[in-house]
Length: 418
Image (cartoon, rainbow, N blue to C red):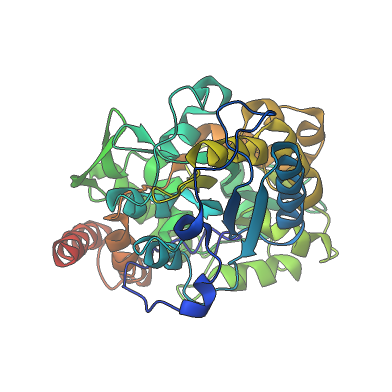
């Protein structure tokens, strides 16, 4: 689900190994005793490096071209395996890596999966000096950092922003009062039952998932029932019962359909929606979320698509050289041009290609206030418990009670998972 990070719950259930899908995996067969590589001193040549990719389409094709060029230069072989349709999902990497039969490199993995992999010792640490942290937004580096250690390399970013009908709303609202006026007049909708979308409100009003202690997330300190979070849940309830922008049964698909049918003038979604919008016939624009009723910026979740090296790979020096090639600025420019993947590198975000495209510029601007989805395994309990948001929106429980229920259910989930 690396295309739509709105479905981000990490499946920690053990999955059955499918032996046929593991044939030819590099980590189990590579040898570091190959001949020296004159093109890259210190990196042996004649090796076979296996890359599993959860990226598809033009981005996968671009990555394969870059990898082939790298292999020819270095005298190695790169085998790319498309795992995007693997029914076992992202967990398949962990299942394979535990036996040493996984790939050497994984490309296109959403960052919030990596915490469980790192905890299990399945990821190599990013070498010192490999990443220049100043080349990325702080939030992007935070996303690939687990307990103070960087385990993956950012490739692209995703977050949510405001789609609006330009025939009805020529200028996007930037303040909550402007937004409220436009929503009252033209309508608004979004995936109101999903914390991935709601966190723009929760975080902006002062809530948090797990306390961030200088780069280390504390699963024992949950901020989804504090005063700011309750204010956000109250606002979510009011959207249905006070402003009547939505009914409690409405979800993201309904909001998208209404926007495409021009029955509402605004909705919230991510960059994955752009191809559909371009075919919808709606003259639309995209803008960052407006400021919230408290005057603070909204803080939507940030998803970072990453590349990492398996801890069990026998070709570490070559792996990291290849990772550099498929994640550098030239590669990210190519992924944006051909696959519309928003670059993770700030320099590429600020390039004319991105800045001159009003759709993608809006998402790049929104990244400045986005908060990375927690990347520790305990986040699974949050996704499981978020069904309580429906009770708040439906009016079955008060925002205060719903907040307490939410946190209690998260704690139970964490305890059960051990």
